[in-house]
Length: 78
Image 1 (tube, rainbow, N blue to C red):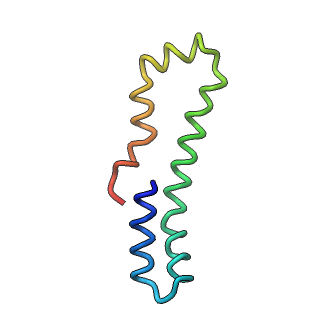
Image 2: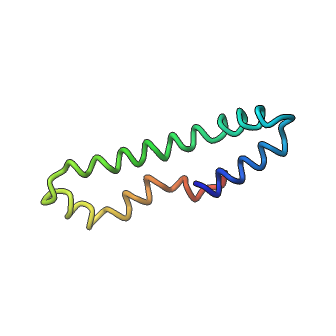
């Protein structure tokens, strides 16, 4: 995410006429993606409330797949 932030900020600064305009463009471009990541993280963190006897077998069997599904867009191009 930090590398994406740096790239988008650089592109915004290059394209804008002022720092203020660049920051507005940067925020409007980054906000949906960071919101998406935050929401996936919150979804995943809900498993903390599940008793370990139920949670652990599920995560052993499907944890990798669940993680991959939740974060697949992080490897997609901007």
